[in-house]
View 1: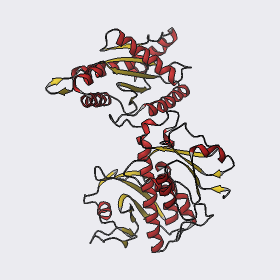
View 2: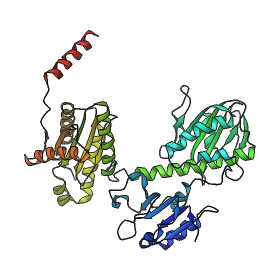
View 3: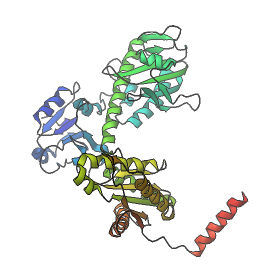
View 4: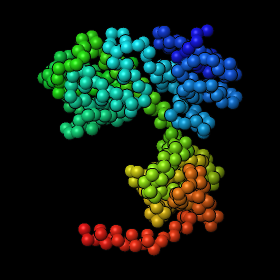
Length: 451
């Protein structure tokens, strides 16, 4: 048995073991163990543990190292796990390849076959980190001053700007079927460097200028994005045409893997029914906002909303209509939020709205608008209006409170609203204001009026 492995796979699924072994890169070492054998792995050295949560029994606890957990349904994953270590094993993704794609090559200074060693710095699975690496490395290495990295949005058929070092003269979105030169090159799977075609069909009279390059990036023939390099200067690391083609293929694989990883990470934070965030995301986001409120002394409020008649709707019309009511409620909640606000579905008929930089006096009107919107714009089924009324509780963060204490305060206010008959807003008492606070507010108001 080797002393060191690139990864240890903990699963009872024989088919998954075979798939992971079949997709491992050349020279990579992987050890497959049963969950009950993990206690015997204390002396094993590895870069990564892969834990199958679909195996029955208690959650395996590796002795050390980084862990990734995966299962078919992320909603069933233990709430103690962070969303960034969870991966869904569902259809539509080459899951074994996705597992292997995050492992950084370890062949010293040598890069992938045919490419220089600096390309190892591009092997990032996190999308944001990969984009930063592309911006930092490609212009410097290939001899250009400007770079724009576009991501392909297949649902709307556009190239969306992911990251750039250019501050002006930038297209944020480019329709793939549009007339722009960039769109034409991408649509024709074209790679052009300094006016010379390296791959793909050359658009007549549309060849890029001699000081720019367009690299169309694909993964397994699927368009994932493109890199647009501009203002060519003498390259610091000259590459042959063959190496440029290899680099483009590598970038396509890296960007495609990072986008796939971003999708599964988002699935761990999104409620599949409503499209809002879920309980796990809300706990993480609220913790971050509390730290920000502590650091900057800014107010923070939470609104908790519970539908008053979801059970009755389910009993009368069935759960499909109840799901429609939940989706309608989520849409109405989200429509009234600012860009810095966020909403999550945290239970069956329970929603939480996060209001940064908002005190209790400012949060109460937001809650009132939510209530009025749900009351005045109910959904319909079979020609009848459904009740979308809700009990709403509002609480403001107090110094010393943690995440659970703030949520408990909002939950207690919501419970008071429900106990009072529902379809109303309740809150904790408004904070008492000192004479000094009043003087400061009057002074600030006077200053604004003079301006």
